[in-house]
Image 1 (cartoon, one colour):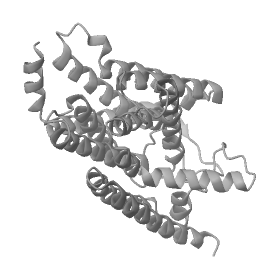
Image 2 (cartoon, rainbow, N blue to C red; image 1 turned 135 degrees about the horizontal axis):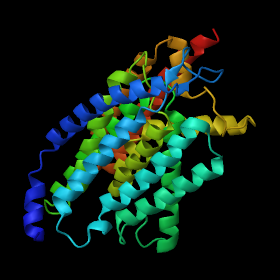
Image 3 (cartoon, one colour; image 1 turned 180 degrees about the horizontal axis):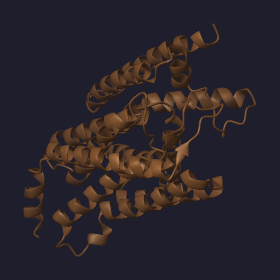
Image 4 (tube, helix red, strand yellow; image 1 turned 90 degrees about the horizontal axis):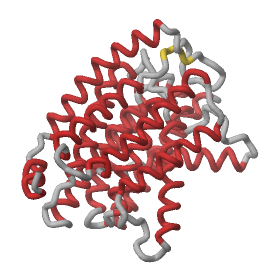
Length: 355
């Protein structure tokens, strides 16, 4: 297919329809997966580190990631079916990484895997993802050698995968965060295409953002408090990977501030909690319930209230990320203040536990 015809076709793709189809498929498939998980007794049992009090099926991410992956395949066939470079398209490489992460994470959900196996899979997936970003994609331009720049991207991406998994600790939180990050990244990439690269819209990236947002929203009714179903590692790990791709795509196109603002709450909560636990000499790599959002949910005795606070903050972060494309520093300062206010609110709610 001639490039000009492909570009013309992609410019008119109905991304809202794509998101709606992903929503519907995810909602239906999640119901089916829920029944299968219950029948096979694949449950997340409460323990001293849990935020839930009754057994809940774990592994609903199978439905979410399957819908996203299937949507990527259909989009790939629709847009690149006649291209000799089909196997080199970003979606093909991302799909290979998704299959890897789904397989390893599903095994981890079922019987547990060594940390070295999980980390190796995360690094390999991040390496495939960096390859998908293209040979010219760099974070620091010419300031660093290309190999070092790529290494930083791989390890940073692996960290994004893990922190998404760490932060998936109350009902609805990662579904909401994935939706807003995807919508924000998609909107920013659309604006970049419109104002910075001569109207050339990034069709693959916009389609991926629509698929993630739609599939996560389709899962959310099953995961809203009180949750009937959890994502599990099979959901949170691949979603962290996909969000990392969209954020790095934005950063490597010259807009790192926007890429930093969109996940800023997740970065701040996980980073500050990790630093606090390390300073106290705790085994910070073990499961716990001391994140800001966890303590707030315990203090308020409501997961949904805390998730809604985060959702409202994320909506404002989307607006600030868009502004940062044109005014980076003021938008970043405003975003830091906004997240600081949210953390303060969560901290105050968390104090109710000990009072």
